[in-house]
Image (cartoon, rainbow, N blue to C red):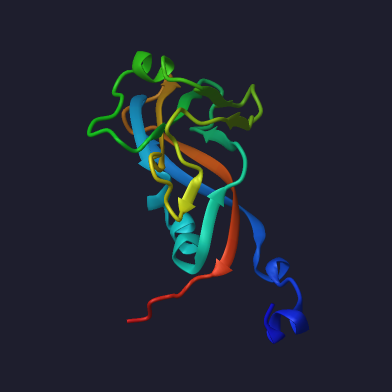
Length: 173
């Protein structure tokens, strides 16, 4: 053990912490498939760029916020898939058949509900450093807006708990 380690002791608690990060994605249309890479969202990029270790430390919680009216209701079927495909689901049935999918809804009659989501096989919870053999997570889903139009907007929000550790080198040039 070095003199500095003896003097300071275990400094792990100074830099290891858990943060809750909400990320949102807007889906436009009354019956629309969607997907987004968690690593591409700016809120996640902030932690990936500034910490040595970043991992998802629990299930991801999802909510849907759609158009508000007594005649409108939004329903989203959501799953987390490995980022290893060139194409993504385009139909409700394709998303509905995915492993571990959840259903979230929003309307005036039903309060916003958060649903926890597990992970499909081959999805890595380690965002940095990347795991060997597993793939970063991609959120895929299908939104239906009852009585909606082609311009109806539904916001999908993922609440992600990250465990971050160490201050990584930040490139400034």
